[in-house]
Length: 495
Image 1: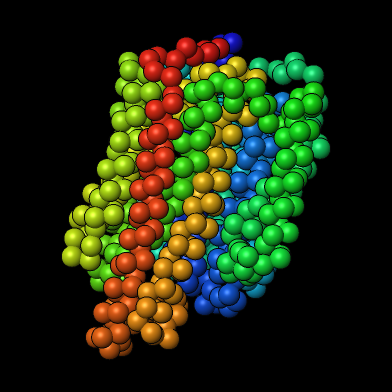
Image 2: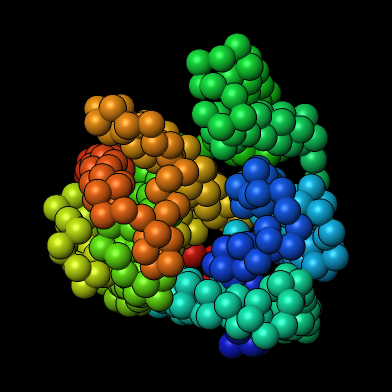
């Protein structure tokens, strides 16, 4: 298949990077604006659902969009997904209550599930394996740029305009990406007999929604040991088991399990799950440690996290060059080692280590993420045919998203339990929310020295347990990478 003879590849690549930027910057730009949004709309108790609603829908739909892109072509499904995302973005700006904003974020997430996997799949279609390895460096740089620019753009919009523009800024960029794909990407006509697996799609959406709801809200809206919790986990697991049973008999399954028989794809996807857990652990709690324990400003806390976003695209670019020469195992193994080194540095970090130590730890984790993610995407796309590439790419991204959700639940539970345990040991009637007093210079100045010292010690000790958990997942990642076949993998190339 020689798609790129008619396709203007540089313009398609720019359009794909623009679409990925819109999806990637969404998280950082909204995080920055959320205090202002909550201040105007109220409903602080539903604060976390602004993020959870988006994460829930984008994770649930990613596999479905990947399959639809294989059935109907990349362009139409990309347009549908991005259009829904942009409509959701426009509606978010018009929200007048927190409940409305949550509903509109669900719509936004419903479209977002298409953006990342299909954008990455398009690149897999128009570039050969050798070229694809190098191009992944450009795609990974999008994450770095969005991580650095998102908070800045969000801060400026909130300060000088109105928080509504945080959502509306997506619209012109998304439309430009759609125009670029429409005019410059030429797809071959699909000649496949289309059989839509409606049962599989419905079961997948329902089961994952229940499981993700249990992960996100468990320990907050209801106790993990409650009857509601037990009912949700039984129902979610039961429906997912039924989904697997039906998929094995489906004529054209939503999730082709045959691709998981390839050991490279199996272990690459499992490592994507564990690295997704690591990623959320660092990005969620590093700023809290730097501001609360090290007493640094929000800007310096942001810098320590940005170091990860610098290491990621650099490593991704290098991985592209090394992959063809040394194979998936060697490059991903180097990434696994880097993840363990970075996680160890976090475990050894103390309040006296300073923000540079935190930044270097973050940088090593970023290098590990760049080396592993690039190796896996390029290898997975090369290991399957064009007809399965959308599903295979989406499955890998789903595993990382699911890892993020699992990680958020695990680390939230570890941190809260550890803090409460620390307060109880000291016979203090403190609450987890008291930690908020450490997070700004103004609120720290209102604290008595002894209380501040106790809160900092408790937060330091509790976050150490979070970093120990991160290290455990880094070691699991490395052990899984050791299962990947050695040497150069034979790749499918239909370009």
